[in-house]
Length: 182
Image (tube, rainbow, N blue to C red; front, side):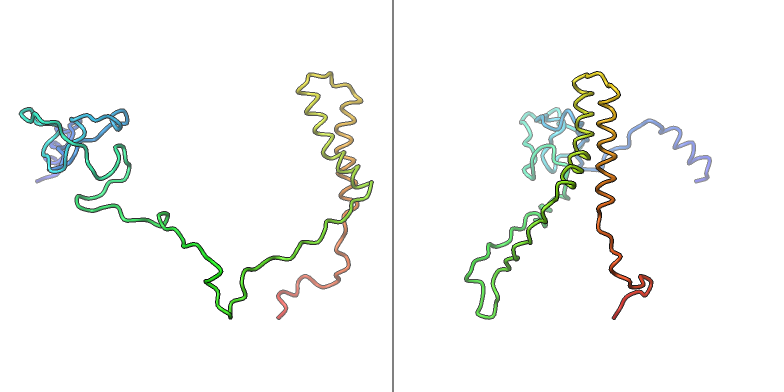
């Protein structure tokens, strides 16, 4: 066939749906997925689209899976169990030999260092300033100069205090450009 004849055939068939392969079920729209409609739920081995007019008995839905399943398999192929279907056996103390060390129990972590009064007030200002500003906006309070100064100034002052009190790592005078030490 020449190219003009092929294009003419394509243009002539524009808008027509190609025929389904033999034994194929017609497409089910999202509204029809949960319905037991004989036009869309044919038994395997049926031919053509939908139900034959001379077929009086109601077709049975496929027994392969629930209606609306998005996973389809070729005829005769069942769903194989996947990795999420695996369940690990429960362990017991009898599983350990004399050579096994048993279960690992991590040591108790060291207690947190006590914060001094300055650090506590700095954290109160860093957290309390924005919270007070949010509460005042939500409750519709008038934003006076002293409330704004307290909220913004408290946050900035607390943040600056915490940054200034951070411990520096000046104790290590090693050259960081040496690379890995073996």
